[in-house]
Image: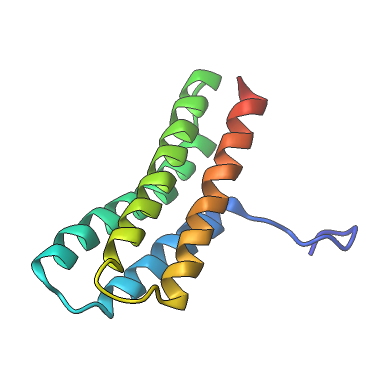
Length: 118
């Protein structure tokens, strides 16, 4: 918590937790050919969100920062797509719903950062 009582949001940690949670979700899947390909893409996209946010924090210029935040937003949106595709053959799991919600929230956060940065 911050000194004023508001929760502290560490976006670097949040993106890392998202990537970790995605990996846990993927480990529980039946590995059909479709799941294997979609899972690979999901793992890459979710990890890219975290990695690019770290890069944005260490950006050498404003232009570099904006570019990495744009990639974060793009990869968050892509993660949401792969999450939807993983559950095409059955009911949407609570975990998939939670991860999709987190991907949506991250997309919105990165969009807000971009609007303030440009």
